[in-house]
Image (tube, rainbow, N blue to C red; front, side, top):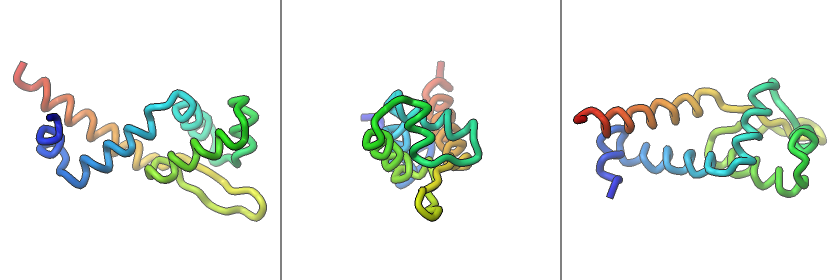
Length: 108
């Protein structure tokens, strides 16, 4: 029902991308991971595990979801992979959501 409104504000292909990114942001642990990554230039999974006190497998799964959504960049670094927030992707989500909210509220 809301798809046409989203399409008007950011296009259909973008709507799917924004929805995937918002879905990735829908878990509190992933929000905390983004906060931790944002406070550091990059982190390995172990550093995130130590910060959040979650199982390594749980953190790895959350990081995979964030990487797949395009919100976090992944770079293999010898024995430890490094993760960092993709600030441009996060800003794009923010702008798309702002455009949607503005279009929804413009007639009020």
